[in-house]
Amino acid sequence: MTYELQINMSTYILGFLVIFVMPIVITVGAEYGINKAITIKVIIFSLIVSTASFIAMLMQFSSSKVILNPINLEINSLLYSEVVDFKDIETIVYVEDLLPPEQNLAIRKNGIGLFGYKAGTYALKDKSRAFVQMTTAPYIFITLKDEQKSYIITSNKEVYLEILDLTKLSEKL
Image 1 (tube, rainbow, N blue to C red):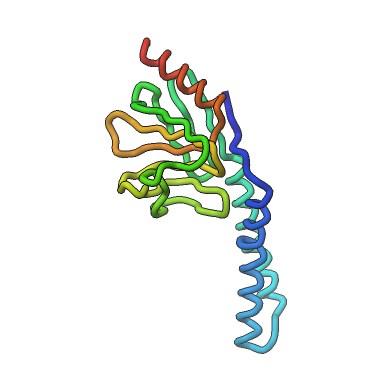
Image 2 (image 1 turned 180 degrees about the horizontal axis):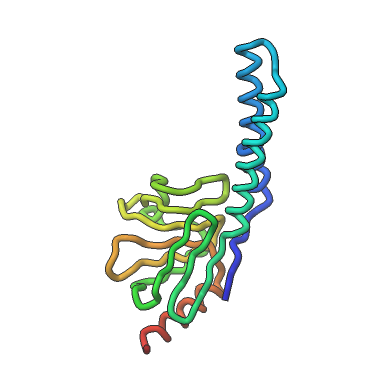
């Protein structure tokens, strides 16, 4: 079963402002500050780079999903993906509202951190690391048996219960 990540409209709007509008304003403003004129080449360059960046952001958002298979959980997006075998899962916790303080994100190691959307590898406050694909609560926090790595995904109660069922089935195999 495939579950799409739900992204708020405010995330799209803030992403548009930061990824599309701000680089154009900064580039054109810098050129005007240096040359006291604005050339068409700089405007076209700014539009091309900003448009490409905004399209990449939209593709990242739209490709973010969680896929549940009989033996594993796939966390997919355009730039970051992970596969977790159910037999390797130690704990699964459903977090309704806020993550516990020790599980809050501390530092982005390799990933994307936009307003209301995070994906990639992050360090947590407790010094462990987690692969993250999240927007807003509720979350599913998964820890593995053998590794220091954990997983945080935005989801709902239905996905949580399905993962619980699939991990129990996986233990019987």
